[in-house]
Length: 186
Image (cartoon, rainbow, N blue to C red; front, top):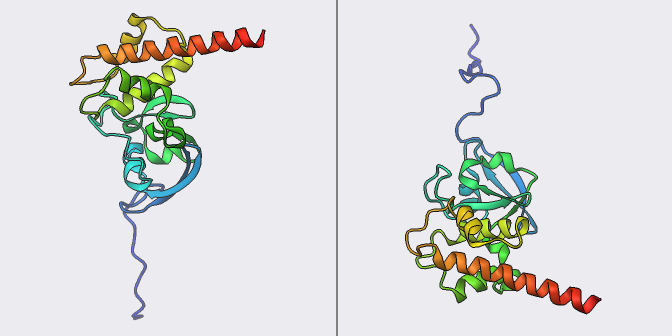
């Protein structure tokens, strides 16, 4: 009888990866190609925070309800806790860190500061990402529209009024800048 050990028989169904097996994922994060490793079951929010160091993406409910983990995936606001990291391979991801070009605050962030639209700050990153996406799609919203958009976020501190004021302020300033540009071009 041979003393050669037999290869272990896998009880894992074909196509299922064993726990602990990691995959390389490459994304374009805030304009830069970045790679990291994750298990197939890892959430996008955890991959961003723990593997790529984008800690501005906060994890709240892990059920897509609170909105704290909102990021842009291929230009559209999405909850990163509802997506597996492996689903993002090859995609373009923007986080709140990407809203601050050259380490300065973007206009939306400046408006949040001006209007005191944050307190503890936990939900702020996700709200900023939703607001940035919304203002691209609806550049001249009214108060009711902004409040409706914000209904997908939970904020325990601000009462939402300063957030609404900040978003309306940005919309007005962008509109004025566009009108000035059109006037000077004419």
